[in-house]
Image 1 (cartoon, rainbow, N blue to C red):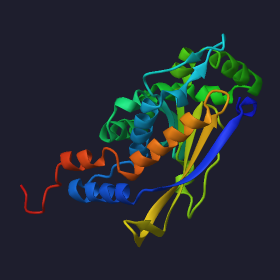
Image 2 (image 1 turned 90 degrees about the vertical axis):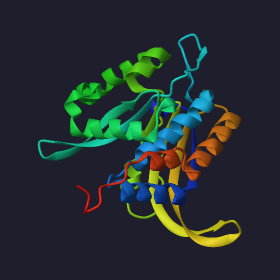
Image 3 (image 1 turned 60 degrees about the vertical axis):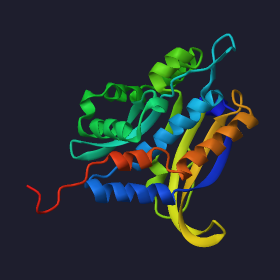
Length: 249
């Protein structure tokens, strides 16, 4: 399916200094770590929800279908029989979810993957290629079915686990796919001063048959703004319960 799309690829750097600082503060305050991926999904859901054109699809009549809910297809790492493996997981209505809520769902999927709906989809990747292609062809002619089966947006964080800078370039399956790359420290200008900042390499893939340049640019600017402002993390930090002190009973 990816080979048939006219894909536009955007490679950007996003300053995640404030977001990562707040995540560290949350861990120090509560003794619990919040998923960086959950934070990115919350930002992605918010940005797509405000710019619905970037997760639109055309049906078999070539009519453009827009969705109010932003469903994000992501990957969680699980352990099965002593081996680590990747499992797709669907975050439904990400545009209406908090960072904590998304984080809790991702961790629940990691702890008990057999209970998730997506666990039963492992058989799909074992099917012959022509069978999968036929399924994709049918799904992409029915946006409602596509949303239920594959979500409306894709996100992979595989590249984030590599050392150093670098952009991951996945296949473009959805109208919008996002890939998280490496995070590196380097000088940046903030309020007219040079300081060491943390930057995330971010890849955006748009289906140009559906998404024009102007909507894609507006979405990208908003997505970057949400990440750099640490969307949702101030509220998350304020609501986190402090971990018990050593002398607490």
